[in-house]
Image (cartoon, rainbow, N blue to C red):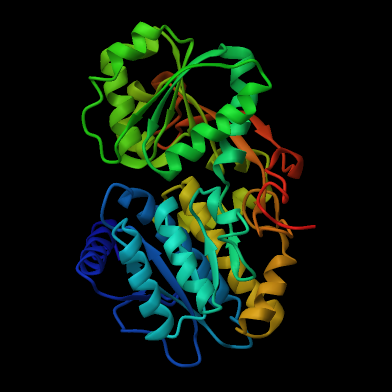
Length: 416
């Protein structure tokens, strides 16, 4: 299939999904079969293919496709092949819950992986937990790790805001200034990111001049900039995601904000940066769980990048592609190790995972099943420094896996 036909086919399938259709991915390509044969290992995959996080959803889908292909090419589990059952959760918690119920009760999914929204993942987790089905979340959230929301069948493949924002604060505040203003998306993700930054920043003498909130889906940030400038911060910390981050950075660039202060994003979005180019993002500092440039020092990253590019016509994976890949593959490999799709046995196998899938060693902490992993601090490159249109970040520091920098199990509500 040539590049044009491949793109057209993907658009056709994503359009069908957005209209409420079902997609099964078997590793031999994309199929419009309704759902898997009875002997297959079925992975339910609710993601927001429509809405403000659609670009990230498509990225995680590309990674998940590769995980399915590699698992099946390696023989599956005693010959049982895996397939991905994709649903559009429409970035809506109720929709996410409804689709997850269908995946479990109608399509008999053995496992659930997915969600890109902090709010949606909590509703998906609630459904899966009640039905004793393993859910491996690939969205940033602190809440999903807390004892009231987590459980035996809940796993969190993604970094959480406390880890992400804390790493950026520890890197940036001593170097770039202590007087800060937050521009925060007014929902769980934004609140948790700003909280994580404040928690780490207190020990560094950080002074918060203001926390300015904006609604999810904001399209005009110009009214916020005069107030930010009047406060005269040294650093502007932008705690938002997806299209919100794209638009706010573009408008901040046009308004000349970067000439007055350093801009930081606790999570610096790969997909938005690729779309908007060098100018709006140049010099912005942030964190990410993965960047393809790790291949220079990490053999597993090189292996992952090469396989991803071979499957997706030379495209390099993004951070969320890595999450889609690891989120699905780790669950499938745990099932293979357990020799079954039984939730209890696979949960035990997944909890015992210590594996270098694509970015170095990752394991799940015992109390909350949070993936303990590295955090990359990156700076967005300028045009002159970029070798090509996919060369967008410079890794300036790496915070190694460290449970000591995470919220303690007691803080999360777990009893010793």
